Length: 359
Image (cartoon, rainbow, N blue to C red; front, side, top):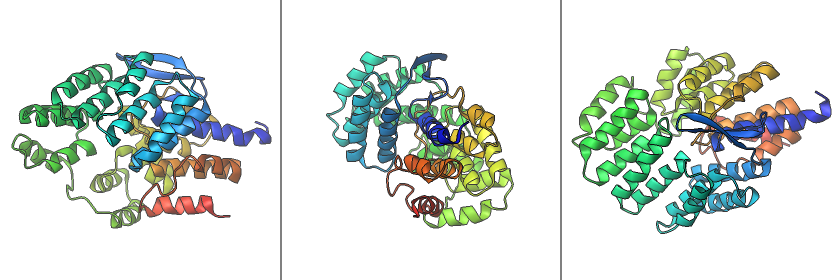
């Protein structure tokens, strides 16, 4: 590849990786692949400016900055009127800001793709906010039928069951998620937070026994303690530490790579992707840990869509890699997609950002 094209190559590669959590785009293939009724459906390529706006909206939403998230998602809709994902997120954010809002965006998304699972999941979440668990359940059951692997939907169904006074039904939904992913941090957190619910108490005790250390470390100390421990841990030890710190398996893979333990991080990422091919964090960890262009392509090729955007550390790690491989200008192009302040009190994320922002 000619040197003059290196920066553009890595910017596109970075946008492809960041886009994994924003609809499943792979920039090598020029199309979007979605899972519908268990089948892979190829759709049109989404422009880089639209993905950039979407990424900024997703990270702003993750940081609970709903004003900025709404603006970015609206921009993504304008930049690519045929993309369903930004419409869904725009409706979700508007409903979160005002429970009477969002319906027009959901209807617009439905006209684009009535079988898009996250549309029905977010509609169900919105109905829950409005205090209508029966309507929420109808939407969420359709979402689950369209995308049985989405971990958010069973927990929303459990919330809807609790709101309807059906504790045993809630327990069954959490059991279903725990059966697929015994150490799911979402399932563990859900039952811990509701351990006083009689129907959930036995499940909370059982999952606490599965979790090697159910007492989480608290921020801000947890990341510093975790990183010191990860520096010399085996993969099994790293997983136990990650569970204690309430990291998702994909976040653990990113953290290991960011700490310089690339081989261990890549191994963790491959294990995560074997169980959940839509993990954007694990994809980015595998991409950054890759040793060759072929490995880089393999880290992204065939990735299904993800309903969860990559975390701030993953985005910053990718920006640092782009900067190292293709120069400061290319790294800054990726860094501009990561909102200031994202990463919270994570010292590792702050160090990466500081390195990227240094003159």
